[in-house]
Amino acid sequence: MSKRLQVILADKEFADVQQAARKNGMTTAEWVRQALRAVRRTEPQGDVKKKLQVIRAADRHAFPTADIDQMLGEIERGYTGQTSR
Image (cartoon, rainbow, N blue to C red):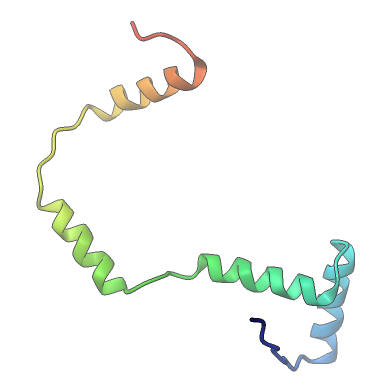
């Protein structure tokens, strides 16, 4: 289901939005929808306290791991298709 949203902008702001939409070959409404989606993607999702709790719990564990330079080298070789040696 879709909902309608009304936003009041100053004339200059509206003209800027219209110009940006035209420049990108889209309607003003579509440009605004895409701009809102882009901003929402940058906003933190979920409960920050819960995320910190999970990170702190994971930090209490001591899992085996490789040397960072070794891991990065293996990843790079995987990208380039080189065999390890």
